[in-house]
Image 1 (cartoon, one colour):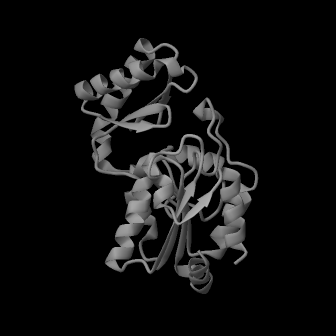
Image 2: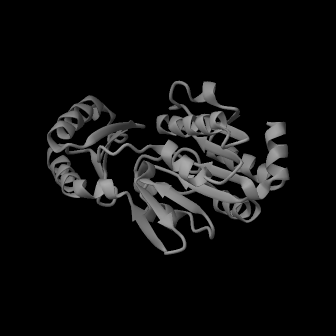
Length: 256
């Protein structure tokens, strides 16, 4: 990491600092609406945004949510695993056009889930995705997974696993790796921090960009937790013990 920090310090304006939100900059909570950045997260993101060429969040959350909980000028936002992006110049959310035709299917699945899965929190993620959470009713895990598979088959949506949840979204080929690639475009160095299975695609993107010569330096940061997926730690260049430790790491980086 010493060489990477030196590269970042020497070439700040061509360095991108990116992170996931849930489990990385916020603690995992029982109800997703209760998630907030840990102490110091907003302040350090603001410092990073002033010091580096690009600072952004790549998350499964909708962009509207990210804008509300992370009010940082200059922060780039990619939401819904790449289906949404905040256009800071036009001050509006860009939605992948390929997802729009599935809005009716998403709405229908959300209504059906609310009727057929009592005890499960149905999170409507804008108009283009719905997530079924069983963290507060862990005994329902198998039932919800099975229901989601059948719902996906009948609606044309695709199920994606998450921490004690499953998301149904359009069958569009996007993931956090695509979001990372968009935000890293034009940079020479990049860092991405994440804690979940979906964040591994962000690590994959950094690998591809280094292999192609698009990036000179890439750093993969694993935010450890009791629910970390297989392969996260093994793929990482840097390990931090939870969101507060990631904020501390970012504070050190901002001071370089």
